[in-house]
Length: 342
Image (cartoon, rainbow, N blue to C red; front, side, top):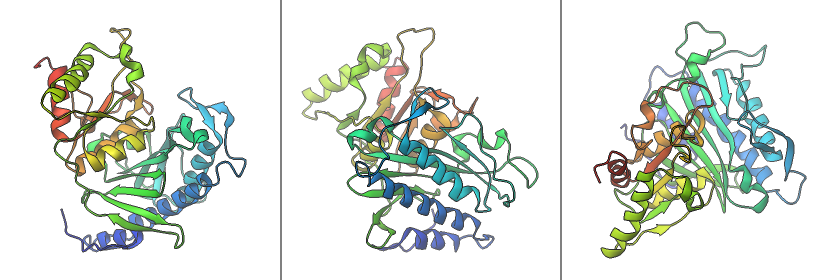
């Protein structure tokens, strides 16, 4: 990890520029891309803050590729990110949870060496009830030959090949959490300045935690190891005087953000009502990989319960996987239950 002299109120743009200094070969292309991600998410935050005042709440009347109803803010966030970053000259391809196929760079604009994958607005079902929502993104270097449009190969890379990832949580304040493999840092948007300012330098997730985050309404759908693990969690830690607290928002960004800052474990196992055909929910490319990369950079662990998330080779753009992440020891304990060691 390269040391960067951080200080309170350091802007995100300044931080990224400082990172660039450690790479003499840098052309500034990555820096410009991060500036535009910052701009796009500020514009999304502005619209989120208008919810209830402008005509941006509710269903847009269409479904996305995963069969989810698209909300008006979903459509706005998708368009804003695609338009802002697609014309910057640093991407060769984009891929979004909302689109069935990768999105090429518009005709007439230069191609670059990077690939962007993103979930434009995570937690859509919470939009109309004013609960925290977010944006998730990951950045890869292209691996296909040439300097033209990227290919599917560029998108379907394991998470271990990510060069940067982040998320923005639109809550009581807007906060961008970011890593480029040099630790995890949080920047809070000051609306009076229009700038993301460093508020949480070098975030490290605790080795253990006292919070578990899972939708217990789906308990009847979990596999047997997950049910045993949750039963042990409640009984063993209550007996030892270290009781766990259950916290679940239902927005991936919000639940992972809390877990990152306070420790514990987040679980979204597969629906195992049909043991022969378990159905996972979260997308590997757009959700699990970027979040897993962030958690690992903060000293945590991200897993399916059986294998490291970042080592999975994506089989398709919208592949779904079970996801378990958080404090390293908490995730290891869950993996022991899955392996039958407990």
